[in-house]
Length: 206
Image 1 (tube, rainbow, N blue to C red):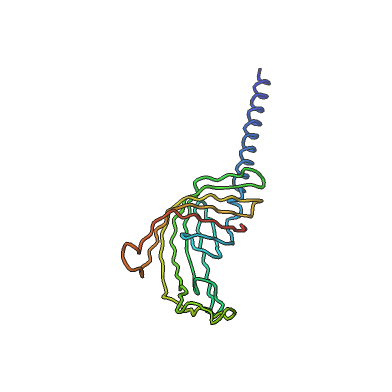
Image 2: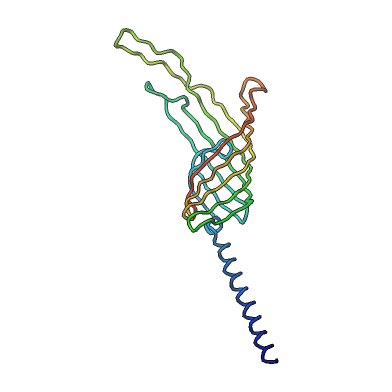
């Protein structure tokens, strides 16, 4: 009887040890989930809340931070075909992870909520004189000029889904409500705009 108790006790100890070992392996897998193992990322972001341009993103535990910005300046010329000579945007987001999982060795993802602030501005191109022809073969292009500078400010809230492929390639897709304020608009009613604003990006996690 005593011998049976010893064997039973040894089996219990081995079972507890094995359970601890398996739990440890499981914990290690969770810690090495792609969205945790590679917390920083560089890439490109497109959005009216997040800002549009090159982006840097980092996770600190379950909280993420992103900054994105870009600028386009094209001098006016006779063959100018764009509607703006200057256009820039900069924005920042704070994100809170709600759920994340590694679905396969090559596929990971997470769901998060976000809040963002942004600022942008542009200078439109206006037509001073319409183009015309002197005769059938002689085209004189329109005379163009830079319009007035228009700044914008925005704030938004929403949800996002990040798809991580092969543990490094990140594709965030977001949808949120954004408030845009244009202080130079003619009337108060035209200064504010609230709408659903989709956003997307592509990043490399490291």
